Image (cartoon, rainbow, N blue to C red; front, side, top):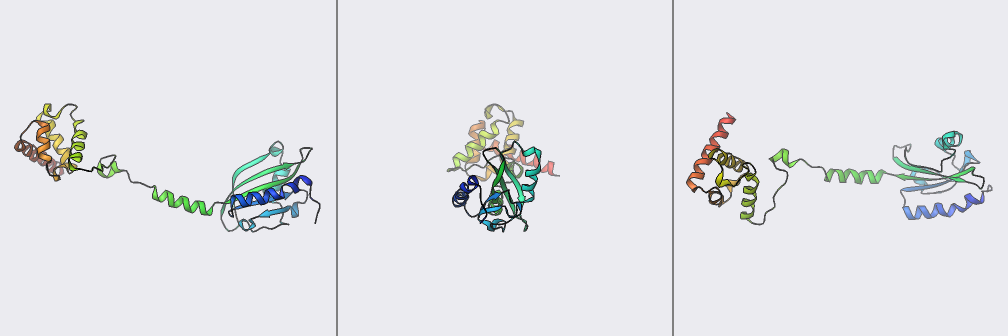
Length: 223
């Protein structure tokens, strides 16, 4: 075995410990840069990139060693790399320096994002929505436990159209309110006309007459 710097040798159990903690999708690699052609001196979960002890330094590692921009850098975190078979890795390279601040090795962490990406696709699919407002003109669906609750909520919602109690609305305003309620299916519910008659201060017969006018207006607009 080649002689390994004592500082690098101390990182061998760190390599093993990180892999055991993080799991099989994390490849942990320890490089000795004094021998670029056989730089890998410890590796855990090498199946991620298919490497073993004795593998060479990567092209990025070689570039880092030659580039002035990394002279004062200690870590290159969370960059994207791709394996030969197309899997995306989230990678981090940590510089290991000796007592004279010279780089003697790299501790690299490569996370295979394949499983997480698949999980994210499932999550995104289940959190993809159509806007209810586009479908039904409302921004929420009411989950009432009683019919009366549903009726009252519908009336409270259309009151904003007039800006005043419905009994003080003009005939035209009341017809517009009925038109809106009819579009929402309000009159499919039992007791709707009685409740609205009380709110508007009109008889049921008047409400039915207003409703006919509202529907006639709608039909005219369709034509």
